[in-house]
Structure formats: structure tokens, C-alpha cells
Image (cartoon, rainbow, N blue to C red; front, side, top):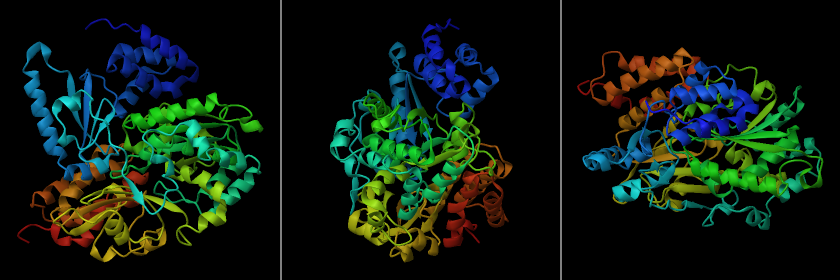
Length: 575
């Protein structure tokens, strides 16, 4: 093995060393960027420099899918294989890419150094089939040449944004990420200025009055969460932005992060002021390299303009932010697993209670909010709670972002008020089903969702109406299927996803996701064993009732929904 020059890494580690173990993920990202992978001498240098046991370093490397202990190609191509991209032909694309790689590799010394990997949802569902080339997104990759893909010559298209509102997405229509000057010229940071003139409890009251609930899927009242953190004993207190968007079919947070990062930062700062925090973290999923770069620029520019730091806007408010990049682990979207990741550990969820409001990041009171949730905060302060509540319905106030993908003419991000029907969104705004085909079903809520059918087309898209119809709103994911799609195939894809993404901490999820996958494979083959119907049901409800966190608790949701809607699909062919 060639001796490795550790000098470049040592320089980085010396800068990170004061942070100790919590700097482990940034250090590993830096190491892999320098060497292309993380061999044992590099891991040992990271361990030494951060004073972390080498076993812990290897544990973290092995936990996250984007870290490599063995050499990989200089160019790594990740191909999305989740439902929207699978329906658009991602398996065929993988085969074609591998064939091209084999053909070009036959050239001997000039063989390209390329690694092709399957990947879970890349947040590019409206541009399926999608790939990442060294972190750079390529949409509709099947329409591009091998040379253009591997050489990074393809410009990623601007986001497809529609709907009847332009509040949260108003700054996403530019040809570039909005700059600080542009953001301020459009009224940016005026909500922060207004908030700093009010008492923190008045800010919390306004958020509660507005009826804002979490937009990441749990729908917990934001004001109550902030109030719990503000009243909790202990210091320091933290605010965290959960930007680990990885639910198959979801891409709203990515579009906000890439195009309008200052709105998220401003929302986080208002949250910090309200709960009494001086330090915040923005945790961005590892696959979102452009979002990470956009947010880093926004934070650097805000700090340089004295919008971060001490005595912000000539007030007594002191606050700063640190950005953390994940490394490929769906489980880190769960709030406590995200805390563990920031702390330099494997992303295992914690047992609750205690809850983050009292025992969160580093064991301190913490308020953690989703990207879209934080983007709503400046809007509420600007409009006032009464003005905000004029949008949407009484029980579901405000605007909502919906991610529409699959067999639809105009996939994309749609901003609408709560209460618009699914039919209006699908047909009036998105143009309906692709030409020559008819609507069969739609998966609401992503991998952890449930299937809607024809009778649900006129259901209003609100928390209360979807709940009454037995459908989850989730984070606003809707994947549409036409009459040609085999729902068993979709369920098998989702079963693969959960089996791959289970962290393995609790047995109901670790074993249940594997059993679910095995049974779904037999169902898809048309040869389920006697008792498989009962086993699939039992496995699903056991995971739902006994799993430690939301991943396992919802891992069977779509399969159980499909079994209820199309029971005949899960029986033997000759039954």
C-alpha cells in the first residue's frame, strides 16, 4: 500500500480539534474529499486529532452510506431507484451506464475511474430518472449521453414551481440562489427586525395564534414546541433546522435550501430569539451538496453583514449558526438520531421521553424544526397571525408546499392554500395524468404513506380532511400512478427502502423490515406461501406498535394500505 501523506488532513483536523467528537462528521467529509476514501491510517489520524476512540470512528464510517473505507472511482455516480425514478426507468439506466462503463473500461490504461451505485431518493423526483455525479444533480439522465453525464456538462434545470400562491416560493423563481442584497431588497430580515422589538413570549404567542404546525410530517404545533424549550431549565439552549429531507418523493426543502436559504436562516434566528438560544445548527442531508453550498454562502454572507454574531441589528440578541452535512442515512431525519449525528455518533434514535424540548442536542433544551416550517416563520411575523390565518382552512391555516411526481404531466413543487382538493391540484394545476393514460392511485406521504384512489380525488388537502379520509398529509408528498402500474411493485420498492434504511437499533424494525421485504418478494413473484397474508399483516402491525422511532412505526404503512385497498394482489395467483 502506498504511504499516505497525512499533512493536508492534519491541517484540517487541527482546526476542528477544539470541537472534539462533535466534529467527527465534518472531519470525515474532509478526509474523504482529500483522499477519495477513508483508509485506516486516515481514520487513525482523525481519531488521534479529535481524541476519539478509533472504534468509534470506524463505527461512524460504516454507519453512513456516503463514507467509504475502500477505494472507489474518482467519479461516483448515484442513481436513484425509488418509485418516481424507478417508474421513469432507473433500472434500465443503471444497466446502460454499467454497459457504457464496461465498454470504456476495455480501453486499458485509459479506463475511466468511475463507480456506479444505487441510491435512495435524491430529492429530484420531478426530473426522473435522476442521478448525482460527484454530488452534482442530473435530471432526466436517460436523455443524455454517457460523456455528458460523467463529464458534468449538464446544467440542472430550474425547479418546476406552480400552484395558486407564491409566498414561500416567491424567491425561488430567480435564475440563481437569491443573494443577501436581493433578499433584503425584497423585505428580507425585516421580520427579524420586527421580532427583535417584541418580547420573546410575544413571538411565541403569535406563532401559536397563527396555528403553525410542523411541515416535516409530524404536524406538532410549532408554538407549543418553542414554549416548551423556552420554559425548560438548563442552558445553553439550541435551535436546529432539520434539513435531512430524504422521504421518497419529497423535494420541497431542497428547492427552498438551494434557492432561498435566507428565509430559512431568518426563521431559525427568530426561533432562537423566541426560545432564548444563542447557537443553532442546520443539518443538511449529505446528498444535497448544492443545498449545502447555497446555505453555507448565505450563512457566511449573513455573518459578514453582522446579521449573525453579537448585538444583531443593534439589539442585545447574540446568535450564530453551524452547518452540518449528513452522510447518507434516512434515519437521521428522525430528530433524536439527527442530534446523535451532530454529536459525532452513529445516527441511532433515542428513547423518548425525555423529549428534545428539555433534553435535546448535547442533552440541553432544544427546538428542532423542519425547513418549510421555518420558512413560514418570517411570513407570520410579516403578515401577523390574523393575516396568516386568512390563508387555508380554520384547522389548517397557511400555505402548503406539495411535491407532485410520477405519472403526471407537470411534476413539480406546488404552493397552494390548505383546502384545495386533490382533483384541483392534479388536473387543474398539474395537467392531469400523462397522455393516453388514466388515474389509478396516488401515494400520499411518501414511503411512510397510504394509497389514495378515485374516490379520494375530491378530498380537500388539509390535515383534518385527509385524516378523515384515512390518508396522511405527511410532508406533502404525492406520487401518482396510472393504470399500467403494478402496486405490488411499488410496495416492493418501498419494502427494499425500509429494509436498507433501518438502523437496526430495535428488533421490531430491524427484523420486521427484512421479513416484510422477503414476503413482498414472494408476493411480487406471484408465489406467496400459505399464511403470508397473515404474516405480512402481523409483521406490519408489530413494527407499527413496537418500534422505537417513526421509521419502524411507519415502515408498513403503505403495504398495509395496499393490502386493504387491493387484497387480491397479495393472494396466490391460483387462489
